[in-house]
Image (cartoon, rainbow, N blue to C red):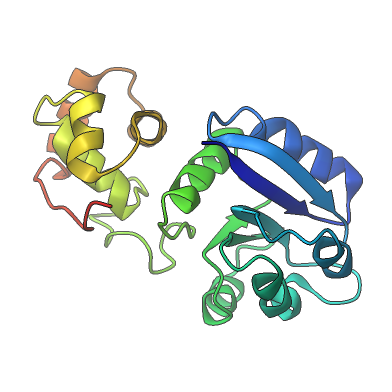
Length: 212
């Protein structure tokens, strides 16, 4: 099955760039676009699976319009997108019931990972905003709780297929996590990831969630 996405941003250039990135995600099917909360609701997006919602919008802001959009597409996961990653903005997004928070400065890989997390029912907030494991030192990588789960199983030598089964994730989601882990650790192989994880004290299995 493919997911239905709705991109809500009043800047056409950014929206086009975002569309070019998200359409490469293997789980993404149709992509609708809107420039405001009113336009988004007018699309009657009841079957939408994921909304990427800009905070700064004309008329109702993303934060103020979140409840309306939630009513318009009740089954959708809603991830707020913002040029600011200030802690108070992330905190406010959580309070308003957002399922995630994505900075506009995020890389294509980060965006695709956020989509995987959101579609799998997991929160996707920036590192150190209450969604990640406690830092393990000043040089510790900013891995999410689920990435630490994947890393722990990766360090036991399990292949992606087995990791996906153990965590209740799709193989593609695991691949996205592994790529993100490699990037965070600055490595390009599983053996190098194991060595880096051991050096940083991250190799001990410590599952943070219940498989879906």
